[in-house]
Image (tube, rainbow, N blue to C red; front, top):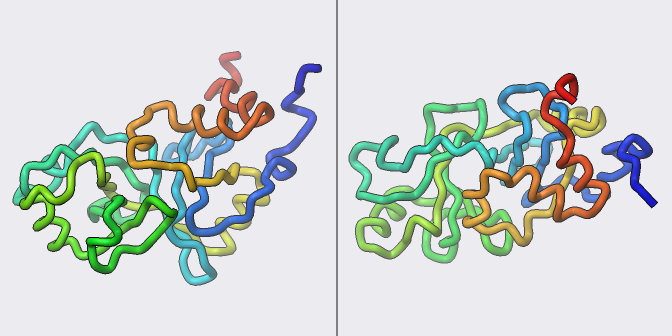
Length: 197
């Protein structure tokens, strides 16, 4: 029997609760240009701070294009969100070695001692496949984010299996939905502009 995507709502599909380490997957027709077809990794979720990074908006830059005095390093730079776009942030796999790192999932951390990161790059102790950089971040007031969820702006996905390598996937939005099952996979096929259908 065929599944009709109009027989259910995003709210009815969202079985996961918001928390640090979840993915926010933009609903298919989101018009906000910052978040259209985006996948956001929540790195903080509390009444004090809701913060994350857009994972699928590559800027076709490396960190050396952004920081002049950084050691040669081919790690990619993404647009992390519309807040503080003149600041650089990073997600990495080396939380055990970079002081001050904040764990997001079993495999991923963010932030940490930037001078230590620079030293590790200089000494070939960390490699481009182990870290990605972001200009800006995505931030919400706690009530604002929960209201966006009530208005079906976001589909919540689990990020436990997410790796740094996944962030270089330009089809991350579609891939994430397809991994979530048939009903979500149907959403991944919706046209970005329904008037063109």
